[in-house]
Length: 446
Image 1 (cartoon, rainbow, N blue to C red):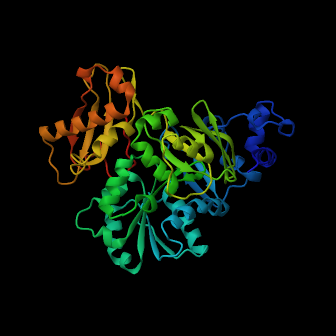
Image 2 (image 1 turned 90 degrees about the horizontal axis):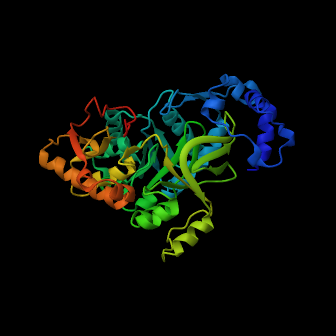
């Protein structure tokens, strides 16, 4: 992608963008340095103009998706089949790693269906793979656990493998269902929408009977704004798993004491930039976006730079992968709790819930809070189905979370007084409607 050329094209053909530049006194024809182009974001651009004016020639595409509005007002996003064709390449890269370009594969879409962006767009992209000759059949029960478990036993025996695509906590909940012969289904997993730990990957892979997490799991970096921006590859997963065991190396590389999602992206399709520790991207979509500030914290690393950094630690990945750059994504800064001046992120806490001594008793979902005057971080944890909460279990969970916090978060270990470090754990039943309502995207910080 040559971003300056897309910029000029969008300035000419998209009414809202022409108005946006006009308000700022920018003459598109006179711009020579792409860095001089003003940044757009959801508030200063997308929500300020009518939907048709955000599209080329003022014409809305053939599909509308709705963002979840996790950081404010939901937005409407025009989509087109050309968007799906481009983004399907990210799915193709993942499915090729699964061997789904040559093995009969059932793809089960477990994202929410309806106006929300995840389910129907995933369905469309997977069908694009079938049009390209992948031996893939797709079924879309959505995030209806009962329907997933109803169709799988009927359909899975007709295929060589099954790919589950969904939100990480929901997929774990499905896989934790007792009595399902997951290994016989030859399960693969595709996730999006949330950063997870390598402990989570190892745990879920083991329960699903996935022998090799590098070629049996993958996470997508996707947004409502522009679809899928990047994807995990066996190479990026191997690198992330190495860094998960070396918090010192991870902190030096990423500049933070939490492990981000690490994916590779195609700069010919999505042009990324860094801005004060956050990400901008430029991409052609149903609504073309130029220097769009998505508010995700993260950064960029070249392919050569990544391998050079790892070589300092004597690590040379065995997995072969595309020679594409890496983007790492922490997520948004509003999902954080400040406690004695230490920033505590859900990514720090969740590792403690995925340790062998507690993982069978809890689902991995929790709510984190630090009210003024608290004697410890308040962590409300969802129990696994059929598990009863006891003081002994709460204490065990607290110890496991504390160990993870002290290992992964140097601010917490050094800023918080020792007598205030032990988390105050409250155990709630599976599916507790106040904290863990089923069927909705979970929020870890409230």
